[in-house]
Amino acid sequence: MHKREVIGINTLAYGLLSLLTVSPSYGYDLISKIKLFWPANHGQIYPLLAKLVDNGLVSYEQVQQCDKPDKKVYSLTESGKAALLDWIAKPTAAPALRDELALKTFCIRKTEPATARSLFAARIGFYKQNLKDLQDKENLLKEKLAIDDLSQIPFDSPYFGGYLLIQKAVWNITSDLQWCEWALKLFEKHLAERQL
Image 1: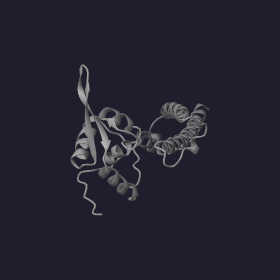
Image 2 (image 1 turned 45 degrees about the horizontal axis):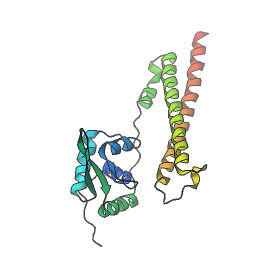
Image 3 (image 1 turned 180 degrees about the vertical axis):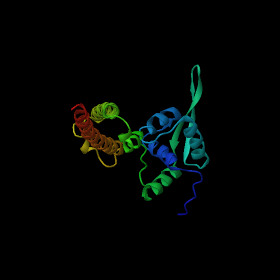
Image 4 (image 1 turned 90 degrees about the vertical axis):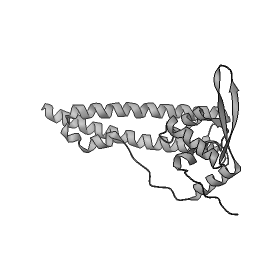
């Protein structure tokens, strides 16, 4: 079978195709879902959806709404499924790390330990809230699937990948939280030494 070259499709576009494997969705819904994995905005998503349609990877159905403009509900085509499978099989790029706190940490010695403590305490609060949000997502998934142990989700379930990503997020956040708590203890130690 001859594979057609896909033009102008980037990782974000493949992310949209991934989301459409679960169910057809409208643009705003796709934007909300993709933000869980990848930073994106309206200005990126709608042009990408148009390219996906132009390439025959996605189709859409116009849905009329009362007192609102019509909306497009996008679906994955057979060509889109094939392109997605090809993309999944390719090696992935190295993960990108962009964390402002990491940059600040590099030069943290230029500030006072109390300032450092405040920065890290705020990040600890952020991580704890994220862990709570992820626990809520796990509970919703358990409810939706009527199971107690999410590791029992079948491999071919549309929820299996989401479960894996929730666990990845929990592990990453837990590790980052532990690092922040460790650093906070160091700042406290330096603050105590300065007060002697």
